[in-house]
Length: 114
Image 1 (cartoon, one colour):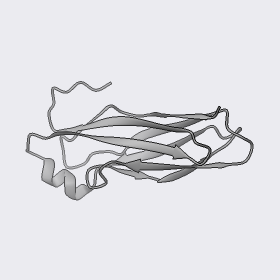
Image 2 (cartoon, helix red, strand yellow):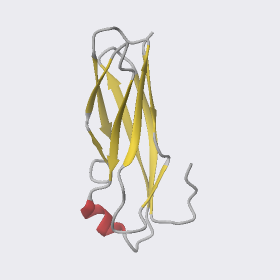
Image 3 (tube, rainbow, N blue to C red):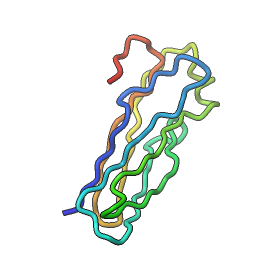
């Protein structure tokens, strides 16, 4: 049974005008030799985007990386406000494997990051 896992930050803090993209690791297990397309989506693209949106995983290339970015326009809106929201990042592969993680976007400095 093929399955895929997502690993990334649980919290992204917006503390300055420049927020570095966060790395997202996509790992596939029990995939076939033929490359399988996996599509990444964000529950709120205005708050957090995923690039690239699709990756190919197979038996040999089990691990790929994607990046989570907060659009610069959104960062400007959030600076100096009390903001706390979450976005769900989903991955769905053509072979039926899927996973999701929740990422909290916050302007609060007391939120713990893992």
